[in-house]
Length: 285
Length: 321
Image (tube, rainbow over all chains, first blue to last red):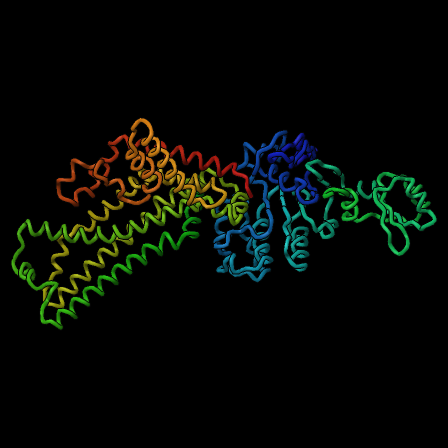
């Protein structure tokens, strides 16, 4: 197997709270992994550990390297967009391209210029004169021109309007992603990424509570719309969650036989956001 | 630019220049320009007032010295005077440079943490030691080179200004320019830059360390911490054994805060033997570099390197974004 990230027993404590609590996971090459969790669940800490930006306990190997000790070498193969608008405000488009072109060995200037040509950005424009969406366009143009093996995105579309958000993920899929690349993305806008994800990871209180590829998620979880007459039978099967719509109940089941569920009503594949809400019930209580 | 490490350093320093063009380039240019303007205004005022009162303040009584052939002594004095003019512009600009470098170092590892652009720089395959080193190079080599160029250009412009003013009075002073030593002045100023970079190390190290460490208000930490230590020492002096505090203020506090001001090595302690000679000789490279013979210089350099090491470590592991 060709694992890009292998983590075992990942632990990180801030004073008395555990941001990562003995988390273990494995990410294969050529996947798009959604790392989804409520605020403060440890998503960003996990990404920082992968990027060598923070110290931690446990074992972690990224592309076969230790991010704590071999960070410089690792960053030739790894890119990240941490949050929107982290480009320095004083830099001009041309300066940013020049700088990355001359310091990053895997940067393709022509590619970057082609991406920029599709935007309204001009070479003389400074980041401080741009809108949030334009900053992300510049950042994405820079990052997509780097032939990296792992791309880490931490809330890359926060605060962008829907046009920029759609364009962001569309560019990633059409112009960047291939079987040699791996993308890890965290976001709260689950609905927007669930169609592009190949793998799903839920994190809660520093622990990985769900780690499965999307096919497995579809097989394991099922949503059934049940009439009032069969609701009691459905509850007997211990659903994860139950909600009411138009006088009917929608139950979410984890690992219940298809045949049993078909007897109750119409089966649907649950949306990741519903799955998330059901899994994270009681997080803030 | 052939080796990757040199190429990386070149671009890192260039980045610093892009970001700090205002302090590195425009501050000395504007200072020189304002200095020239003030002198021009002074000359014009002198001319106007002189014309109103029928006297020539500026040149009236000394003007005859230019009429006869100058003696060797007068030639030397005229040359020294003009060299002094060129040094004086560089002196003014070097004070500005001191402030620029001080605040540059204080912000160099702090500003990008505050605006989170650190996360962009850290996404590139650049080592933290190269990054910190590039800031030292930008602050104590690049910025002084620009300042020297501005200082010398301003100085030459000043001389030309005076000569032109004299020629309006029918005094041809152009030949006097030949007695000045612009190349010696430039060589002395340029040659002093490596000394400056080494001498400033304790300050650049300390300021960069504070810059990499402070969660907020790096200036307060950088300035208040040494002052508080000094106050504690004074207090101990009051109640206990007298260890004195003068050494602390000048050799510790002064070095970690004020060494970024060029020429701060010219304190009396370092140059007792040359101070009785011609004043300008102290600026010659030989005497300037004699400060390297003092233990304080090398203790400061080693301490500065240690502080820089601390700054690099903090840059690598400080985790507050």
